[in-house]
Length: 203
Image (tube, rainbow, N blue to C red; front, side, top):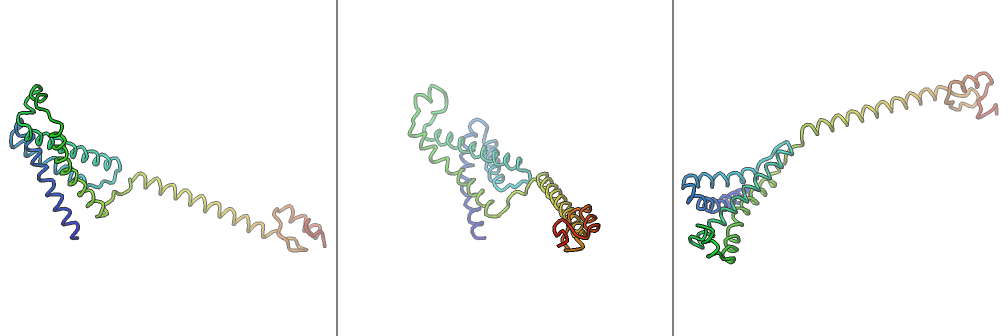
């Protein structure tokens, strides 16, 4: 229980600066309010989908893809906001970008921005796995498996009944002389006529 509380608190703390980076990246062109709405929406998207569990496997895979897309979006916007802070007016135009571009500053922006959203998403996924909330099998797959099992059971029962009937029928045909079991009614009739079967021949 303590692990879940600490991990949840850690995921929220990591998502907060990531949300701030998203807001700063969008605010200059979209406005402060739109930036905050997008920031909170992106962070909640990948955190909530990391906990999501769907019975349909296709929906579960789609939820995982959407969560990863939200994480990548947060990372990209955080890198842009961090680079813009390191290189003022460096993203104001193509000419200005080429004139002020710095690989080292871009690498630092990536290294400082990527872990925030990535760690928050990883912690949320770990919490989901630890809670044991695994998706249930698809209902159609379960129904098909049940039908297959029922069919197999019915076939096995029919085969057993046939074998039992055959054994009982065979056991009722015995040689009047030596008592050996006879497989066919014709052999039994012949043994009754001659007083012995082909196995003992009256010995």
